[in-house]
Figure 1 (cartoon, helix red, strand yellow):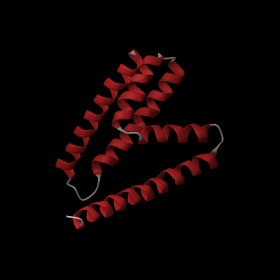
Figure 2 (cartoon, rainbow, N blue to C red):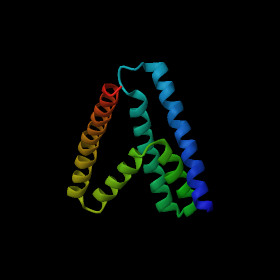
Figure 3 (cartoon, one colour):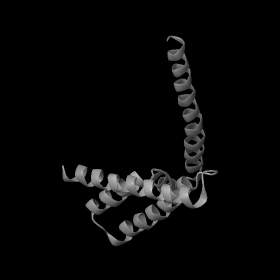
Length: 131
């Protein structure tokens, strides 16, 4: 149960950090480009790379890994986990699998986001027509 609590508390903290970073970016840079998301994804990727390396080479505790990587960074951005997993594939010589994962994740993610959006739009329009 303590592991679940560590992930939940860390995830809540990461989500609050993501919200704060996005709000600051919006105030400083405007809304013409998703600066907050870009910042969060890049900083999350750096942080997970650092922590992943630190935990690998310093034999840090599993609970610290759960709290910081799965919890805080998972709440901050899942893009960081995506980046670490692809780095792992590259490090073990699976460049083709890394490329496939990147292509399918990014391309498929955009396509499925569009599909979900358009489905919601169609359902919303259909519910308006029935009124």
